[in-house]
Length: 306
Image 1 (cartoon, rainbow, N blue to C red):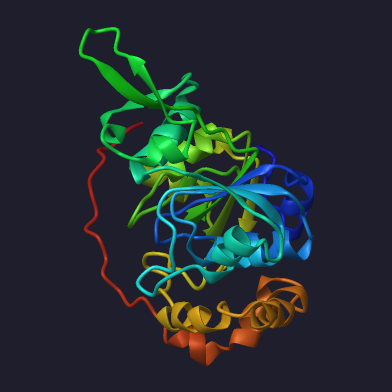
Image 2 (image 1 turned 135 degrees about the vertical axis):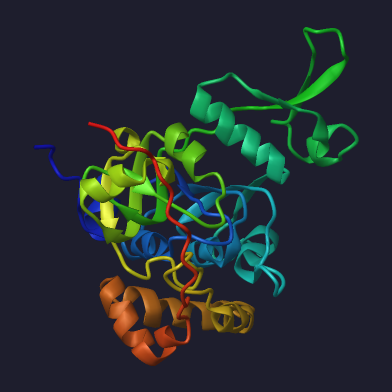
């Protein structure tokens, strides 16, 4: 029988996150694992490089807590609301610590993760031609195409030391199924040196085998599985809970002031020992407002096999 990879979030962070690591908490709009971010803050890691296509408020909180020294990213903002005030404060004023930034387009970050996953020396893309991003980021370079069609932009591979990826379900060996709005989770899983998957449910291997095409991340690249229902709150998980839009709006007001931000971190992160306690504090009434409802997919016939 295969050995289980299940552990707690505290164990996963203790085991796999070291000071100065490159950390990726991915998920495009959905599946953003705030539980991992809060545990990293709680364990007071230092000088991390945070990589993410859309930093979102998850990295705003981490940078406000002073755990990061660098940010590798594409779009940066509180989605549908406005600026990420903590990141802006760190870049413009060095509060609470100076923050180095390395900016790409969305496709530039896609290229970096793809190159990392495929162990390529770089990823070529034409979209940086005519852009001013190469002037701001010397890691974006141009090379002569070997096929005589001019210069083309290239970006280097990105191989995080550790990736935290949220999903609907996995088995105890880490075979992970995700459905809904996908980002670069699969590529990040193959690019990262260590992978922790956080799930709403841990299911029997037979359930995973019964629907193999939904398995986005194979267990062979997963180092640990954490069972953490609502671990992605205030973002959402398709079919399990909706996005907590009120939280994003509230964060805009809180994060404008460093003292208010630190008070929020003290109340909701440092003084909350784990995600279960966080959810208890949030309350069942608040969680009930995020009910995803039901919209079932049709079954498919994979055919009988012996």
